Length: 622
Image (cartoon, rainbow, N blue to C red):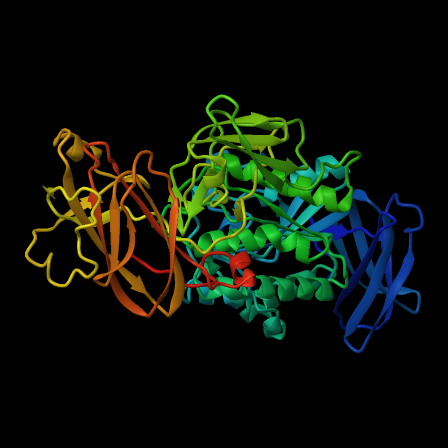
């Protein structure tokens, strides 16, 4: 007599809604008869028929065993009132069972010195198909049964690490035990470095040779029912192509889990990917995956996303041992919110509510108030609140000079006027390796989010910060004497490159060196236009100015004077695809000029594309 599915030493059986077992059991045998269960000390189980044996197989359903344990269970095949075969299974618990799946941060790569202390009522079904008291590393890949894990490791099992292997799963089930007061079990199913495409549920029937198939095999081996799924994956999908289909593939995967567990409302809690120490640029696929994960609960019912952006690392990408325990608790709190195991579940994880831009009464600049839902006890930070950034035209802007917390609100003090801030986009956790420090008093982190348009979305570039410039030439007063067509007038002039580290292209120090003398300087830069577009050239200046496009005058203000105000003047025009040359002449205004503001805005982008944000349309480059 051999048990194949549903009952093993040290296992946790999934309870039903009445807090009783309802477990399918099956196996092989060499006799026929009634399948009988005997459990000493449990009323009604002195000798109870639960199934039958015939044709070399037996099957039955162990129903009605109360939550708790441990139980010593004897299965018998009774033929003509005689026990023909029997098998005893020891140390069995009844409680809740969970699937832990995804890639390496769920598999566990944190230092083992920080692993949670094992608890006898919290068990793991390890990768060798054995139940044990849950102890990191629960993903003992070196002893795995399923071939897919060997294949993904290059054809051989990896060696056992003596230093690394802590993940969030053990801390998760220990917290769930505190909430529910019932035994907990976890099925270890993750594999490092895997993409959501590799978890394709269409490969279910491949069993142990596919990731999803292996997970379903392990599920069915343990009775076919679980209480929910915890998931940490997405790092391998942070690429331009994969991020485009990530949400759809997650929809398909969650639907498959619900189908194969026969639970259409199966709770699913996922981690929003944290950080990676790597080069990045905007728009970042890493941020795109985080944003999709953050939005997934609004798309699929009974799903929550847990932020991890504030947690420490033990290497360039893996959550550190101590913070894996924090993450496990966060996962449990979110699962408790969905399932109501404790008497007072916490609200869902923190979520962005709204943003408001106010004028600071003292300095007249913009204060940005960012408000959050589901905050427990107020927002906190171990130091000055960090993690917010403003973006314009795909580039982060150095705008925030201070920040503080006020209940459920973060107040960002900026160096811009409200009218200027309203042209920006707000992010939290921008890039792949941000510093983010804000949680609530229940240690739930603010999620990565953005972009959030502060005003009406605009297809606008950053300010020009690099141009070629001539030396100072003899002054030309109000510039009326300068030609409308440049021709070859400036071809023989020496040009030098000038870079500034601010939006205002200021050459104030050079002008000051010439005192009150009236001088003239030319600036020039190239504008690469990737497709035909309507562009609005926004200017600000504090001296007489003239602008030529491809050598032909398009703007002249003879009376420019202090102060220079960004976007004070705008010139509309149609630009053909290709490279264009813009040339400025700036009069020094008898030493009172400082410089110019220059940026460009597309006026032919639809409201639909504007709402999608940068990346949905093309902008000129300079």
